Picture 1 (spheres, helix red, strand yellow):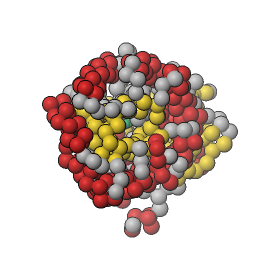
Picture 2: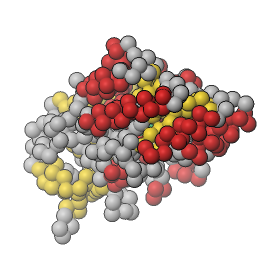
Picture 3: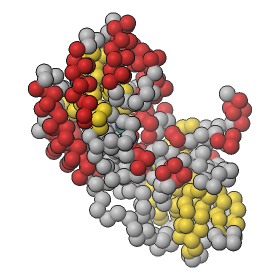
Picture 4: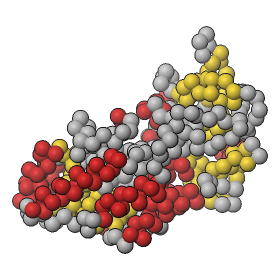
Length: 425
Ligand SMILES: Cc1ncc(COP(=O)(O)O)c(C=O)c1O
């Protein structure tokens, strides 16, 4: 069961009417379901536990780094995949164990590397020859050994949006196949580097299992080659990327059905089961780095209609919720389902649902067929728990939204709406 659902034509978050929360805290408002996050985590984690493989499930905290969500997943036993010194600070502060923190990213600064070495995190995922040398130099200066995994770019098309594809030749991530052996050789010679693993993350929002199968085969061949060179590969890090449903998340007679949804859709359970089956033959400690799949469907963004404007060629529904609150539609032309909080039999129309920001790309939904909306109507942008608040900004000096966490028959504010005075800092 999904913890956001419709009953009597109204949208609920666990036991609460979303409309009531939106009235109490104002809009734009992120609302998260604690029980949905836990359900997602367990859906990914349990097959790993059942497999009896040694593993670390590292939450990619870039997806949503609200402190309460970080604490929740740390308490469940998750590790953290971090992409900056700031994320290391958050991971450390909110309960992630050092031996479960892995640091990825093509552009780590010297200061970040030093900080992570002093924190003694379990792994640096290295993305270039120069980086491995710099990590070695800084580790030498500190008199420590850095544990690293080498990230390979296997040139595999993850069949997702080009901006979230990471494993193809033209992407900046990982080390090209043609150079990878050389990087292993160089790293092996460095006294302050311990090469513990291989890493691959081919993209995000992957809805098809085939690219993963291709990546695992590639990694299998690579492991054989580097082990023949004398490298003791102990960790196989497979990244994240498990896709989630964005279209037709909720179905109802007043919500137009999107006919073009991809039908061949691997569920989270299918994804993880097939990946485990493939990876288990290598007999390594597995690391996975799920982000979106843990939190995306556990969050919604509630907004309100400000004005309706009939243009010459289009009708605009102008809302209080802009690209600074939710960047994904403008950044990736991402689709999010929009659900009016009070579903009514008013008929549908096709409109552009836009925000108040001074950019033409500021839209929540373009050419969307939706129930006729009026000034003052509230709605929810579904599946916004991942890369929603974490990509938000103060553009146009707008204030970042508040965040509320619902847990059965309780709810609480987990981040206040920003205040104008905070814009000074
Ligand atoms: C290295 C790495 N691991 C994990 C993730 C998380 O991916 P997702 O949120 O699609 O699971 C990302 C996201 O871009 C990433 O770059």
